[in-house]
Image (cartoon, rainbow, N blue to C red; front, top):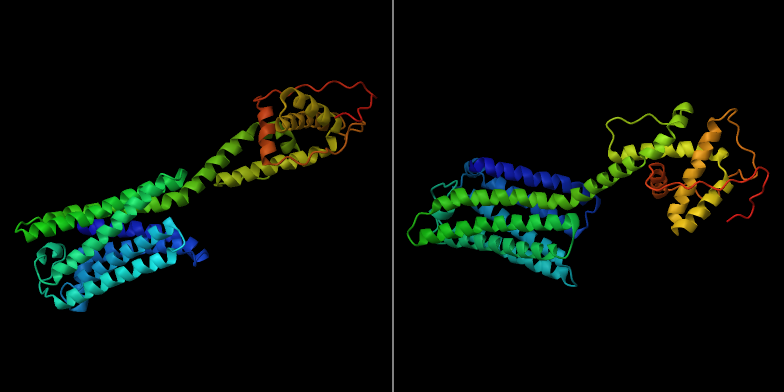
Amino acid sequence: MNSVINYASCGALWLGLAVRAPDLLRHRHDPYLRAICAVLGLAGLCFLLGAPPTVGAVNRLSGVPNLAAPLTYAAITGYCAASQVLVVHWRGGPRVRRTARRWTLAYAAVVLGIAVAFALGDAPAERRTDLDTYYATTPYLAQMIVLYLLAHLTAASVTTVSALRWARRVRGGLRAGLLLLGTGSLCGAGYSVTKLVAVGARWSGRDWSRLGTTVSPAAAGLGALVTVVGVLVPLVAPRLAGRRRAVRAYARLEPLERALDDLLVRRALRLPRPRLASPETLLMWRRTSIHNALSHLEAYADRDLYDRTRADALTATGDPALAGARAWAAVITDALRHEAGPGRAAPSAPGAGPLPAPSPDPADLARISDVFADAVRVPAAPAVPSGTSTAGTA
């Protein structure tokens, strides 16, 4: 079971690393990205090296009993260093590089201490799952075990406190990611705490090795899973939010496209609908179709109708954006009627001509579509007697 937890946790962490890797390649000098990728990569390496089959393979290939233990502890210590560097970059400040360098040197000293203690100690019997408790009373090896566990507990505690404290200052996907990251680090702290309890019990003559062989791996595996989700949420949340906005914008434009449908079909102005397309692509397709129709209707646009409708709507509502949308809706409706009428010739009335307003932008299109959906009522423009000039109308 431990092997399944270890390999699954390793896979989850390296999956998170694979998702982050493209950002790192594009911004390879970003210290924050380097730190977070180091955290994910080293955490996965810890689980890989700690899996019993990997432990046996390393010991067998090296010919040194229990060599996998100091290698795993060194990977855990490297993960701790990366976590602390990540926290330092989160906090920011004028001495980020100096503080990050100090943490790195401190954990490098821990790795050196692990190597020296293992070299001085004697561990002839291979222990794949319970080395911590089995050699908890062996000189030098006991110090090595306590050293790496305290280093891990320190890093997990600092990461937990920093992530949860920062989560109170932000909102959205970043807040959710930090809460998950803090929770994952707290679960990771449970790994070192249960190991230390089992080692302490061994010192007092009790055998609580099952804490280290069952509870600790479960806490570490859960922490790894939650940590990966926490790292991915700030990356995925903006994309999901963008897709949600695209879906809403696509649906909002449907009344306007429906009003233009006869023209789009009759004049073959609508592009083929893309298959298996993203919401953003479908939104672009609908906007393109609408703009094609509006471009075709430019020759039938009544500038005076636009001016009169906009002026009346502005007087009634005091909202320039809404007034413009009502004016566009009135002009589009009038142009569609003229375009589809007998002869379909462009109007030659004095008020006809290019509109002074620019082509509607995406926000304008949405408001015009709201008018067609009867979200707001399009007021009827005052009738102008035939032959009467409307020049100078505001």
